[in-house]
Length: 403
Image 1 (cartoon, rainbow, N blue to C red):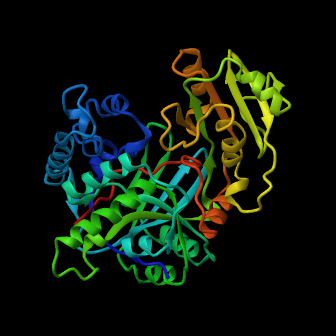
Image 2: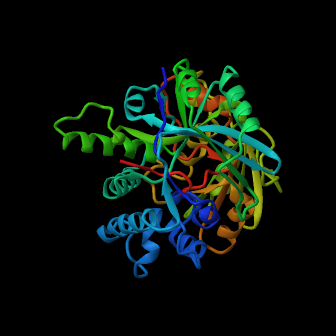
């Protein structure tokens, strides 16, 4: 049984929503955040990327960064730009990108559900990123950004959302600079969605593994300091948008490798039939394209002898057949020789990074399917890191949960 809880959100006045709303913290770097927040004093990037308000070259893990984030959040919530709801509520959040829409329920989910595997994970987290977000949560006493979850819907949740959207006006309806429309409706009488989720056995983390893990760690820390802890406190819940799985779209999560053997292509040809002048974007599952020396090369991965879901993911096959034996990348979570490029940036980004000398090899993958994600999660397995890139992304700052 999944728990979804209404909350008293802090949110911007509608006239400030466009300036406040920003991309999630983990899809941009510091310099990109600084540029996006330029001329926008109310941008929520000042809360989730507070290093942009400190001297250049300040480490994102510096204690001053966490304190600055707390100061910025407090100032923003107390400004004329923000209000706090008088009553607990749930929200409906619809995104439209390139004519395709996906609509989910925005509420708080339970840390206990995360710890007890009602909310299932499909990736391991990186310790440094988990530590970072935990410090932000504890310092700010807030969950500044929602995570993205998915679930198998019998149709009842979608039916409820459709009816509510047809009969009510939204509190926000804005189109961001990337052309994505974000529309949010408030649901004050939230008994129906709460009861519908009580019929759902499992939720699945789609986007936000580090934020989920950090919320659980922060709640444990808060509970340890509260002798009257009961489990119903606000810190025991964190915000999420829950989308039916049939509305989700996953893009590829590509890779770059900084240093490769001089005879990389020769080793590749010894293991695979290598297609020269291959298409940058693989046409189907099992195909991978490599960009090196101004050219694209394609291979078809060999099927695994194992039958479990995780072993048959393209990224798992790539790990076992190319990354480990040829490139000596044994752990993608910790190896400094590999990095990740979200599919929204396209294969042109891979070409640019290699052509500019910032990397030696670009790896373009076929996207993991939502069915593969759920199968791996249901089997209690984990995917390699950065196996999925979900689009469109939620905007941060529109609904904030404090505790």
